[in-house]
Structures are given as C-alpha cells and as structure tokens.
Image (cartoon, rainbow, N blue to C red; front, side, top):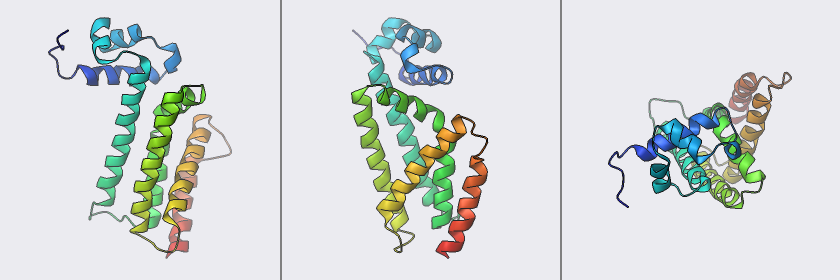
Length: 187
C-alpha cells in the first residue's frame, strides 16, 4: 500500500486525537471518530496507526518530547533568570498547565494498559534525569535526583487538585508561594 501524499497526515491524526481527548476518555473514542475528526479516511488512519495504543505512544512521545525541549530551551535562555527557585516554579507551572493530556495517559495506564504504563514510567525516568541534571547545574546543597522526583510528584498532585477543582487548594497561589519560600531558603 502506498503512503498518502500529504506529509502532515500523521500530525493531523495526533491533533484530532488530542482534540477528542479534551472532552472524552481514550477508551470512549473509536478510530473511526479519530479519522472523522482528522478529516481523513479510516483506511488512511490505519496506514499510520494499527491501534489506539500506537496513537497513545506517539501522543505521549510528542507531549513529553515537547516538555523536554521547552525545559532545555528555558534553562539555556541567558536572558532569563533560571536560578533554582525559578526552575522549580517553571516546572510546577508547566506541568500543571499541561495536565489534561497527562490525566488521560495516567487513566489509561492505571486502567490496565500495561504497554502505556511502561512507556510512561520510562519517560518519567528520562525526564527526572534531565531535570536532576538541570538542578545539579544550579545547586550542590540538595540531592538533584530527590528534588527532581519531588517536583514531579508535587506537580502530579497539584494538577489532580486543579482538575478536581479543590476549593482548598489555589494551585497558582501555591506555586507562587513555593517560589517565594524557596528563593528565601536557597539564597
């Protein structure tokens, strides 16, 4: 079978899936729904993706790859204050602001999608290593591996409270206060 001519088909499929995930669980979305949302034939979708797991893997890779790239660009931008307390704020804010897709990934992984669970854990480990490296460039007073995992676990908790609209936790205020306290402690 020859590949469809439009080189952006794969991106259209991923974008359509992400749009559907904004309001539905992956388990409730069919490949036909995705093809319809992308404006392509179902056969074209099957050319690129044999099943929803393959789609979730690519979405996971795209999502986490973008987070990695954004972190690298932010930390290497010499015009920005990327000190440790600002790095912590950046990671928490970024993770909480992009939580919607991660929630779907967690849901499917926790609901028994073993392949996705393994992929997600692998990516978490990769991101924690990169984050630990960026932390170690800014301090030697704290274990960078510990702080990296603390940030990842904290950001997951914050996005859950934001998602369930917990009236007791103002996530944005919590992040701002954390930055202020950490600046004092780390100075």
